[in-house]
Amino acid sequence: MRINRKRLEESMERLGRIGETPKGGLTRLALTDEDRRGRDLLVSWMREAGLAVTVDQMGNIFGRRAGSEALPPVMMGSHADSVPTGGKYDGQLGVLCALEAIRSLDDHGVRTRHPVAMAIFTNEEGARFQPAMIGSGVMAGKIALEDAYNARDRDGLRLGDELERIGYLGAEPCIPRPFRAYLELHIEQGPILEEEQLPIGIVEGIVAISWSRVTFNGVQDHAGPTPMRIRHDALVAAAEVVRGVREIATRMGGEFVSTVGRLDLTPNIPNAIPGRVALSVDLRDPDDARLDRALPLLDALVREAAEREGLRGELEHYWRVPRTPFDPGVVGAVEAAATSLGCGHRRMLSGAGHDAQYMAAICPTGMVFVPSRAGRSHCEEEFTAMDDVEHGANVLFLACASLAG
Ligand code: GLV
Ligand code: MN
Ligand code: MN
Image (cartoon, rainbow, N blue to C red):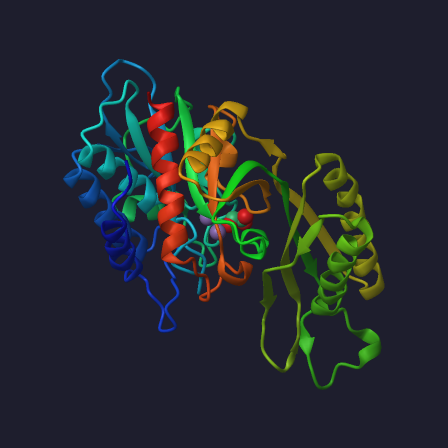
């Protein structure tokens, strides 16, 4: 039993055109018109495949194929939103391989004991609305529905309103439900599989992630007549934090990573001293205790930068996901599928967050990784060779079939 590579490739090409950038990447931010067009196309394919499609209160889309017994489903899934100038594989590939696995069950006339379902989760990237993985987070009971609805994008638009605007505010309660298992195929987004020339990663878990927001309120003033000695420049304090966040990773060592990825600057013109700056801090480590030890370093950094520049600094640690181990039974099923296909593989930890991280809180969960060229992602250069996609899809398909009985 194998998936249909040609059909999968055609689906990748068609979905990849919605929100395609001139350089062949993808900009399909959550709950935009592009996201709606991508969702509409996926839903039409799910219906063509005979799935019963439902949408929940968070706009998560589910499609279900009946099983022969009244048992909880095996669910596969991922997300269809992207980061700005991102790639066509992150999330998209997991959704399309889930659909392909279900289409392939039909091709081979397979009846499973458990129903088999697929999911497309809302706003996984956290690019437009924070935090990331918000659709699966609400479903796992880790984020309150109202908090999710009240998340606002850069222009002040509310997530709940945008869900309604694109027609994906569903009626089904977004609450934890029983699943036999959750499986997610994803690109690795790091260099290991390519370096070791292996087509498959068996994901054993995901690192701990912490997101913080730093705000400096200085004094906006004219860039010309204001002498240096009386300035309170919010961007100068922010610059210290950018450098200092890098140094936190150096100090922590090991696999600790730290990133300032977002800077919002007011008024952001050449001839005014920046009065207000907000920046994001993303910290990750495989070990929760080490991440805990890093947070006070960030606190001190912000305090000292604010003192030096004589302005007010605020720091909010607003999102945390703990190190998440996956279920040994599901990890074993993925490994057995890779072995039976003769695919070279290794076990590994994910440095990126995924909906699987929240799903693991409510059901046995595992993931399949496929290689990323040069380890790159969240960029237009993101690429995975079709041979690797095919191997990954087959591993997902067989693992799903085995877990669904
Ligand atoms: C999801 O893309 C993440 O931030 O890890
Ligand atoms: Mn992703
Ligand atoms: Mn991503």
